[in-house]
Image (tube, helix red, strand yellow):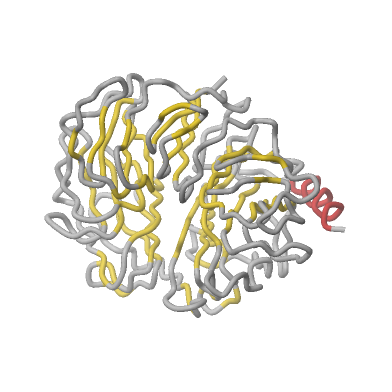
Length: 412
């Protein structure tokens, strides 16, 4: 019944006009399974975030040293560094000293990048704008975060959207979600959407994605501005109001240790749909979306919207997702895809996709692309660029080669 309903929804929505999406880069084909040889290596810890500023890739996470591919020289880097996308060479002049993990990055204007996380000075707490040329902070931007940290950033023109588990930015009270001026950091008084009724504790935004005019957020909330929105909702960016888009798909509980289990989120390049990935533990023979990837239609409206398709791992977490039109890339520490009947086992029809995989955007089934990666904690960051797909994680083997915590599959 779900599949038939989903096909009807797709056919109906195909006729709707759609503004260009800002989430990802469209690619006509699935990327190569053979990673490029030029990306640098992160020598410890984990990579949480990636951003592209011109031809420079900025990498954030929790680590202390990096090195160029083919080199033995270790370069100290405190939780953030940058490299040239064309050559892979680490930028020597970009070495900010951040004293805590970086969880989110967003490209800024004028060769700058925003970094968010759980660090303190010498910059403003948890959120800073840096010059890529020399790593210095932009003094005109000030948006110190209090009562929590930053986990997600999106820049849209003159605005910067900030998500996390904070209670205040500067002098303005904001619960987990805010919009600030991209140049100054001043909090927008007209954007006051408030996530509420946290599942299992404080409210937190885990991930955000945007098309032109629509923001999708997921996290540990149950309401947005008092409207029931279990773990996920859509917001109109022009009016600052919660949209009439409501699903109960994430209302059910998974394991008790995962009171909130939504994680990564991304829109398709054309903005027509988005995909959410989750953790939570195996839940075979149920309708629960624990340890899954699920597609939803952006322009559906009303209550109890159901996913167009669901792909279950059978008990392993997915943390990151990137959509290119030709594929929905998912990453975590999964062993399988197409595994609805598995419970930490390979059920009937399951396909092996260790640590990374690609799903057909229309059918919701795993594609044949299977480069493999060392599983570890899992993929925490994807970044689609014209040249391919960048991957950030905590392990050192990608596509059967040594690529420590950062790698890139080239476009074909």
